[in-house]
Length: 281
Image 1 (spheres, rainbow, N blue to C red):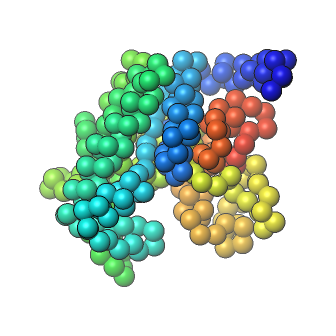
Image 2: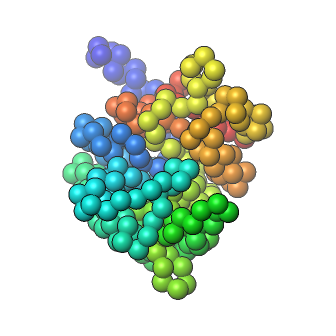
C-alpha cells in the first residue's frame, strides 16, 4: 500500500474511534483465527489497539480444536450431537484444563506481548456464569450447559481499570457442577447483560452469504425469520438467531466476520465498507 493510501486508510478510522471511545465490545474469538500463528498475532494486536483508542473489549473464546487434540492424545473418545460435544466427568476435566488453562492463558499472553493488559478468567471466577444443564429431549449431553445468569461486575471493574477480560466459557451451578457452554451463547449473554455497543463473532466464514455466495453486508432483525432455510442454513442459523436475541435485548449491533483475514476486526469496526455482515435493528 502506498504511503498516501495508508494515510487515507488511517484517517478513515478517526470518526469511528471518536464514536466508539468508552464503549464496550464483546468479541467471541474462535475458529481458524485461534489456530494459525500469524492470525493469532494479528488478533492480539487488534485487541490491544482497541484498548489503546479507548474501546473496552471483552473476549469470550472457544477452543474446540484444542480440546479435541488433547482428548485424542489422552485416548478419550467423545461423541457429538448437533455440534455439541457430549461431556462426561472425565471429558469435563480436559475441557477445564484446556480452556481455562492452556487456551485462555495463551490468548492473555499474546495480547500482553503487544502492550495490552489482559486478564484470564473462566465463567466460574467471581460467579461470572451461573449455568444449568442443557436439556434435550432426544439425548443426554452430560455436562453441557446453558447460561442461567451473568454476573458482570468483575468484567466491568476490570475494563474500567484498563484491563482486558478474557473469558473461557465454563459455568457452574449451585451444586458445584461445572458445565461446558457454547462460546457463542456465553458471548451473547454477556453482551446482553452489559448492554454492549457491539457483539462480534469471529468465525471461519466471511459473514452471511446469499444464495449466489455473495456477502450480505447488513441484515435487519425483522428479515431474519424469513431467511431461515433459504439464505440461512446449517451453523449460521443459531448464530444469527443469537444475534437477533442480543439486539432485541439491548445490544446495538452484531457483526459476523472472517477471522482468517488479517486484521478483519479493525476493518469491520473502523472502515466505511466493513468486511463482514452486520445485524441491526
